[in-house]
Length: 96
Image (cartoon, rainbow, N blue to C red; front, side, top):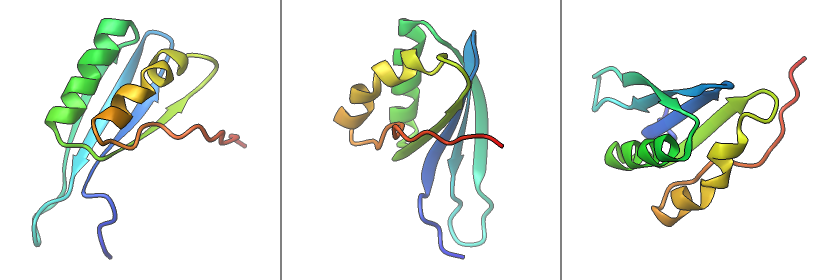
């Protein structure tokens, strides 16, 4: 199987914080490296998360959220785009 996005992140947003998993593909037969961190939903934490993703050279970010808890993160979506990252896509996915 080919690696499509070698440096990506998944964000799970709740009322108080966001759990972020950064996954970096290994070279050759090396396994992928995953790290999970927790970030607050206030502006300075969202900006710190952005800096963390830039430092990890993440090129794609996907997110999952319920209710309106995603709004602080999407408000700063332009910050991801300025750094060359593809930020959260505004696509609704209905849960069954």
